[in-house]
Each structure stands twice: as C-alpha cells, then as structure tokens.
Image 1: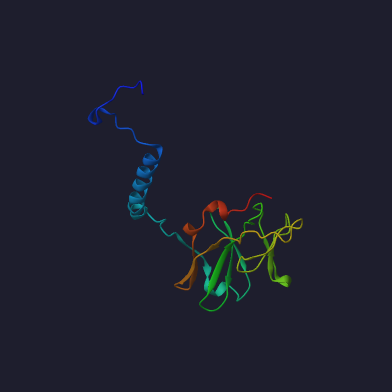
Image 2: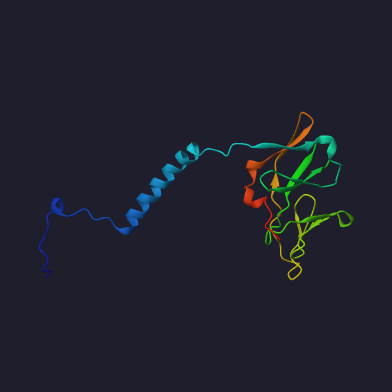
Length: 164
C-alpha cells in the first residue's frame, strides 16, 4: 500500500520530462532556422581595383599591397581569367613570397609551399607531409580595363600577414 494520497487527475501538476522539454526546444529551433536564414544579411561586396589589366603578365603572380595592410598576389591566367590569393601563410601567418624559378609560393618562416592558385603543396620544414589550408582566394573581375577583387569575401585578418 502506498502512503501517498490519491490526487485527482485534474489536480495533478503538469510536469514535463527532460526528454519532452528537449523535443519541444528542438522543434522550435527547426521552425526558426528558415526564418533566421531568410533574415540573415549577406556581406555586401567590396570591389577594389588592384591595377590595370595590362600591368599583369600571364602566369606571373604580382604582389599588391592594399591600403588596409592586406597583401595579395594577383595572377592573370588568361586574357579573361584572373586569380587573387592572400599572401598570409595558413600555418603561422607569415608573408609568403613567390619563387619564380620554382613556380610556387614559399613561406620564409617555416617553409610551407603553395601553388600559384593558393593550393597547399607541402607543409612546414618539420612536417612537410602536413596538409595546410590553402591560401584564401578572393573573387576577381575585369571591369573597364582594371582588375578588381572583392575584399568582403575574405576577412582582413586572413589577408594581412603577421609582422615577421
């Protein structure tokens, strides 16, 4: 026999289990996600001219320093195709340099190597097999004879090399 008094169902307190609370919260989040993504504002483009198209030689990265301290390498691949990558090494943030004879970027601090497209070729001198993130690339366009890059696509901290 139980010592607890019988409570009529209409007098019992409403108690939710932990599982019921979590289900309710999860359902609410699922319903709010489309609303949140619909109201999220995309980062506005920030197109910045980096030079006249004629100043860039095919397949030769050109170093460009911007007013905000960002350092980019801009490469004309074809008459209509241009790529731009950050010069900030993805290992520790040193500024990579272009090695024309070896056709690659190399980090002077730890020896990481990157292709002209920014793709990681090798890790550091200590760990050459380590796969590092590629150099951040920025959207480019040709407009009125100039090459422009969209600075909003890559945050400034990923474009500005650390002091060496």
